[in-house]
Image 1 (cartoon, rainbow, N blue to C red):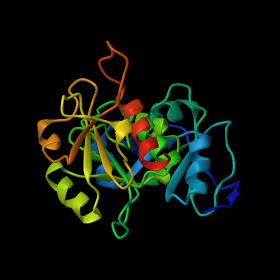
Image 2 (tube, one colour):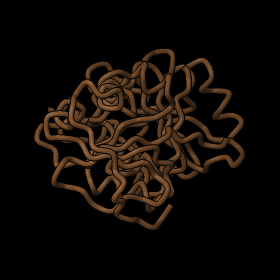
Image 3 (cartoon, one colour):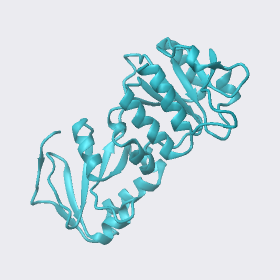
Image 4 (cartoon, rainbow, N blue to C red):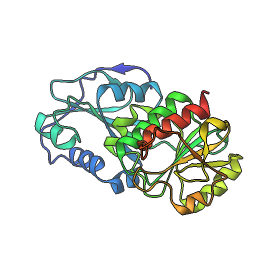
Length: 258
C-alpha cells in the first residue's frame, strides 16, 4: 500500500450522528472497542505517512473538510464536516486525517535477541516513548505485563510516533512471562533499588530481557522473583529514581548499541 490517489468519490459526512463518526469516537475512547474490532485510531498526516511506509493495514481514512489529500490506493476515504470531525477526533483542533489501522499480530516464530519488559507502567506517554526508543535502537521486543497503559490508546500512539507500525510488541500475563523468556533463551534482569542490585556498568546486557517498573512502586515482588539478576542505574546521591521511560531507554542502549 504505497501509492496515494485523490478520489473524487469520497463520501461526505455532515453529522456527528453518522455511524462511522460515532465508531471512530468510540475507538479513540474505549479500549474494549479497540480490542473487539481489532483496530486502533490514529490522527495526523505524519502518522499516516508512517503507516503507509511500514505497510500497516489501514481500513479507512476520514479527512477534515478543507484538508482533503490523496489517500492510499484501495482504502475507503471520507470527508467530514468540521463538527463531525472534531466530535470523532481525540485531539483538539486537529487538522487530521483520522484513520484506523488493524492491530498488528506479531509472529512468535523468530525469537528476539533482546527485550524490554514494562510492568505496571500506566502513563501512556511513557509506554509510547519506550516503543519509539525500542524501534530506534533495534530492541527485539517490547513486552507489557501487569497493569500497563493500553499501547493503542491515542496518547500512547502519539508518543510512539509510528513505532507501533514496526516495533514487535507483546502483551503477556505475568504468569506466562518466565516461560516465554525461557523459550527465547533470554535471562531476565530487573531494574531495582536494592542492596543486591549490581551496577549496570559492570555487566553486559547483550542477549537479555530487562524489566522496568513504574516510578512509584518499581517492580513487583512477583516479577523480581523471576529475575536472574537485579540491576541498578547509578545516580547522584539524593536522587530517588528515574522516569520509567528514561530508565528503559538507557537500559535499551546498553542492551542494543553498547
